[in-house]
Length: 195
Image (cartoon, rainbow, N blue to C red; front, top):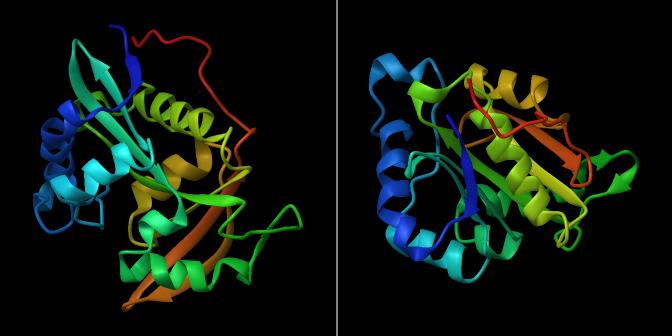
């Protein structure tokens, strides 16, 4: 089965939102929650802005069906949410390879979501690396966060990508890992073929 990777257009919003709310923390089924979840809630308006202003929504398709997405955007875009306002204020609390992280030299990646039926088949690595590659011409550093109780996401991001934990923080009674990587770094599969 072949995977197609592309930058999303406005026509993809409904399908992305359907996938998103299947795994978003407020709407995910209890049985799926242990396999990872998405914290931030998004609307059609949010995704429209992400696409038209940031060119920052990336999707993976199998047989013309969206099976994964990854988001990436400037800190200015993310600043509409309190969580990201907190992250912006504390960007300089850690470094990556002794480089200071700023709003200008970094962007925020995530969330990323992979349909349960294709997990473990390389889709996550493909969408992660595609998003990283697409953003690498704009920023040298990617920053993200993972809730400490979201073990599946943490394992995937620390074992299957070039991200490294650079700090931890607490926000709104939740504990998070703060991760970062250089956008020119990459761990990627050699082929776009999925078994």
